[in-house]
Structures are given as C-alpha cells and as structure tokens.
Amino acid sequence: MSRSASHVGVAPTILALLLAAIATLTTALTADEHAALVDTRADLCVAVVREMHTEIHKHALRKNGEDDIYETVPAICIAIVQNYTLEKRPKRYRLTKRAVRLDDEADEGGAPDPATFAHIMTLKTLCFAFTDEFQQELSELMYKETMRQDPDAIVDSFCSTDAVRTPPPAPKPPKRRPPTPPSAGPKAKKAGGAKAKADAASAMDSPPAMDELLRKYDTDGSISSLIEMERETPEAMLEADELAQVEAGARHIRCDVCRALSKAALGRAKKRKALRSEDDLSTIATDICVEQPLGPEGVPLVYPKFPGNPPRWGELYQVRRLPGGGEWRMERRPKGAPAEETAAGGGEYSALVMKHSMIKRACAAVMSDDARDLAETIFAHPGLTAAELGERFCAADCGGGEGLKDEV
Image (cartoon, rainbow, N blue to C red):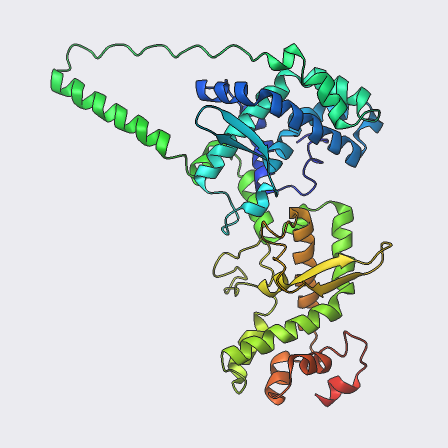
C-alpha cells in the first residue's frame, strides 16, 4: 500500500485491507456497473472531493508536495466504501452518506456477509474507475485548492464540469456464443440451454462466498493474516499516537474498571446462584475480562461480538479524556442512552477499538494481581453490595491503601 493509502480511515480494517490488496485487480466495468456509474457519477465526485479534503487536512499530506496527494486519489476509495452506500432504486442507482461507518453495521461475525461484500465490491469498482479517470486532475486540484477553499467550493468548481458529468461510453456487449454443434440433438440442446439459464440465474442470485473471494485475491495469505490480526488484536491496527493513548488510558481507568468488573462479577454470581460455590466463582472471575471464554489454546470458544474479545459489560460505560488532554476516565453511560457499539450510539471504529482495548488491558492488569483474589473476596463476603465489594477489592487501584485489602 502506498504511504498515503495507509492514512485513509486511520485504523485499517478488514474491508480497508481487502480493498487495498485488490485495488490493482479492477477490470472493465460490466453493463450494470456502468449504469451505476452513470447514475452516481456526480454524487461520487462530491464524495471523493470531500473525503480527500478531510484526509489532506488531517494528515498534512500537502507538506511533502503533490506526490502524496496523487497517491491518495485511488486510496480514498477505502473511505468512500466505509462512509457511503450504494442503493439500487427502481429506476436508478443512488449513492448516500452512511449515518455510521460500515464497520459499525457489520455482522457480529466480524466480517461482512457475502451479499454485503458483493455490494461493497461494486461500489469499490465504481470508485476506482472514477479516480482512475480523474487521478491527475484531482491531484492537481486538491493540491492547489484544499488549503484555500472549503470542500463545497471545490465541489462547485469541479464536479459541475462537462468532463465529470459526461459518462464514459457503455461497454461493448459480449460476443455471441457459437451455436450448439450439430451433433447435439434437440433434447440435448434443450437440456443444455435450460441448465445454462439455471446456472446463470443461480450465479446472479448467489454472491460469491467470503472464502471464494479470499481464494481469488489472497494469493499469498497476507489478507487472511491481517484479518486474523484484526480479530485477535485490533489495537495493532491503530496509529502510533492512538496506541500510546490506549496504553496511558488503561493505566488511568484502572480504578474505574476494577469497580465495574467487581459489580459485573457479583451480578453474575447472584444470577447463577454461585455465591457459595468457589468453583463457579472462580470461573466467573476467570472470564470477567472477556466476552467469550477462551479455549485451551487461548482462542475464544465462540467468536466474540467485537474484535479483540473485550468484556460485554464495557458497553454500559464510556471512556473519555478529561478536558485539556488530561487523564482518561471510564464513566457509566446515561440511563437509557444507547451503547456506543450500536448504530444509534454512533461510536466510530477507531474510538471503539481504543475503548475496548483500554478496558480489556485495565481489567487484565487488575485480575493479574496475585495479592488478591476476586472469587475468594466474593466467597468470603457474600453479603456485600456491589459498591462495598468495589471498595474492598479495588483498594490498591483506587488509592484506598493496603488496609482493606489485607482485611479481606
């Protein structure tokens, strides 16, 4: 991937990595893709200009000359796919801005289903076709005007030109197949024709499965490795400054996380009627920092809802930095407020990865302290409230000194 391409989207994702890997494999447009490009050409121009304007400012791409901006033109298609959706209406295609990034609408399996992936590929193909056609013009325009004009002004001057509004010629229809050889009898012809029609209809109705797409494009296994990396350690995909914030935030919110995990563990113990079972309490404590329990090899037994397998109780909280770039805090979300992990909550992918990583790291640090044992604390004091359990178990993390911990 080019230097500029790595900026787009800030935190690379499964979709971004797939797009970057197959960018050079785009072929000529089909008739349906050409129709979609004709319908969305003007809207696609607006989207590309606005996304490029954002990326150039965010990453100061202009400081090294025009080369970085030139390379960013095709790479911006990653942001287009993440932030826009292509819809087929009865009479025409339509390109619209997503309310939330594509990652936030992904299935719980962590990867898009085949139908969604095929739809994404169509939008990717249109974007690459457009940016390939106007790469030089967009590069020169954005280099000169991004720091002088807002995106709407650039859109007005460029996207209304005849060059942009005039679509390329439609692709030539495919050559007709040669007639069936005379040796095939009428029944064979009829059967063969029916089978061909059925196969064609099946191919149109059934988009390629994810494993088929990977076999086609993942020739050296690099895409599969990146997908696995994001599933297991998504924070590895963050920018260096974001990862540094995660490491600092995990230390800052340790007290908040300790109290939250104590409350979650006590709630599970009461729900499972395990307050008098040391074995059950030990299992609860072992799994408190993850959503899905880990198998013998440290792999979740069931694929978790979010990459990295963070605890689900984290959805009840928000992690924010205090004003002025100070310390991080984890706070309970307002009653009735949707979780940030949902579309209604509006959490962005990178921000959610940082949140989940901070919580999971802080939780692991608390539970790795050999000087205390959450299961033993609950077993020895089954009548404690969640707040009282937090006071006792989290004294070392919350500045309560050693007294309470020793007493426990």
